[in-house]
Structures are given as structure tokens and as C-alpha cells.
Amino acid sequence: MFIFANLIEAIAGILNLVITLYIWAVIIRAILSWVNADPYNPIVRFLVTITEPALYRIRQFLPPMGGLDLSPLVLILVLYFLQSFLVRTLHDLASVMR
Image (tube, rainbow, N blue to C red; front, top):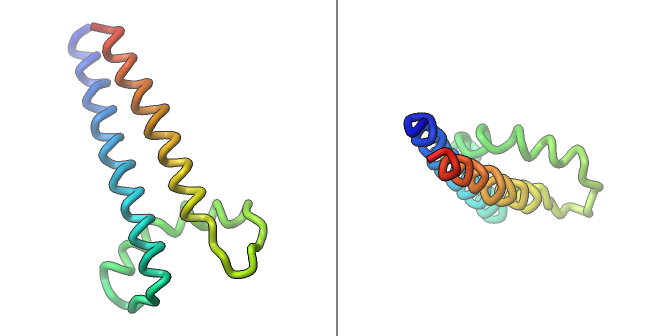
């Protein structure tokens, strides 16, 4: 039973790290959109590639705001919710199993 609890604890830690890194990728992408970065830069292309699928889905549900894109803010809020709910739930589940 301890092995399974440790596995869940490790999954929670990795999930926490992945969500944190993705939040930073969204923040950096939003900042780069303000400064009009070179779209052919490999770093910019990587950030667009990993964040655009989620941002595109959110944009489909948001009404037009006159050029103001709130999808990064909504995505960050969703990611913070997942981080605080899902990761904490996995940590609690692992502690109960011990």
C-alpha cells in the first residue's frame, strides 16, 4: 500500500511541476504578444505551438472583446484551479493511504 501511495505522491509532484511550467509558458506567450516578437524565433514558435491549442479552445467560448484577448487569463485561472484541486487531492489521497 505504501508503494501505491508513493506513486500517487510522485504523480502529484510531476503534475504540479507540469502545470507550473505551462502557466509560465502562457504568461511568457502573453508578454511576447504585447512586444510583437519575431514569429520565426524558435522559442516563440515553441511557445505558440504548446499554448495555442488550449487558448484556441477558450477563444471559441469567449465573446469578442474588441481586440482584447482574455484567453490567457482564463487559461491561467483554469490551470490554477487544477493545480490547487487536483494536485492537493492526489496529495491527500496519498496521505490517507499511508
